[in-house]
Image (cartoon, rainbow, N blue to C red; front, side, top):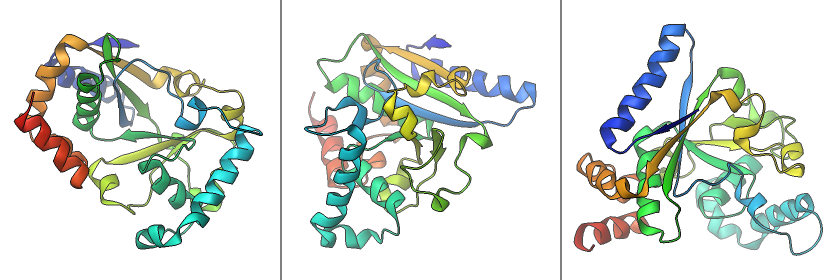
Length: 241
């Protein structure tokens, strides 16, 4: 299903209508959101890259091993316990993983989509917010019982809060199964999830006004990225065009 909105008010009404639909049907859903600067497939970063040598899966394992080995002192402050934590940390710092970022915060997803489209001159005609109305069975029951490379189905999981940014962004990840990586499946086309996805399109002409409205509500780079990177991005928006 697709919807198009041009204002923050339109967006909130759209979300409210989706929630009311499930409320009327008596179904319980966990609403997850993903903002994107442009209308690109829901595939993890590792599928957007080409391995220098060997298979994708072999390079994925080698990269994780090297990430853990290269400089333990950089990782030690985060008190990682297992490879779920290592991949969570890597994902937040740009490591190509089989994870995709989602959030329970509808406004954070819209801010990311609109602000990214505003700053990206190569973005297409629309920014996108995906809405995934997830059920309990769409989440991994206990990811600690299995390695992230061994899960049989693409699922969702909530990472440990090993970094403040995860908490501020209300972070959730989807994780592609090995089979999904091999066949390069788009998350939105996986049979169990297709009917649970809504694509909200935001015309490029509307993103600047939406970003301004979100800043008025305190949704900005510094509230979502509570580090120097976020503060600097917020100050740039505040003092420059």
